[in-house]
Image (cartoon, rainbow, N blue to C red; front, side, top):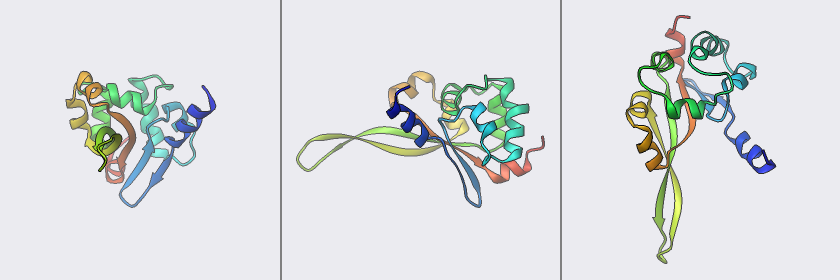
Length: 144
């Protein structure tokens, strides 16, 4: 991986939280999340005991959520956690001079909305998964 791709990858590997949610950059692999000290112990436990039954540790969040189907075990687990997914969608904007410029618009999908879109539709839209949002209430009420 060249330096620019590595730096760009790092821009989408972060852990942030506020009073209601935990935000994870979608370029993290599950393996990296388990090593990340800023990730809550309960979330690491859920990943270890539930999510890694469906996917390889080297799978990124971005890839897993992009290809996720509604009848998978990990879908059921993430649904219980009240997970939402932030995506970027390309959009063409016209300037005053008439030039067309490509911009990206962010949108937050529920897990059901995301999995209801088939793979061809996601590709047609040019969807890029940026962030996974975990509800703290969902995490708190999840019994391991």
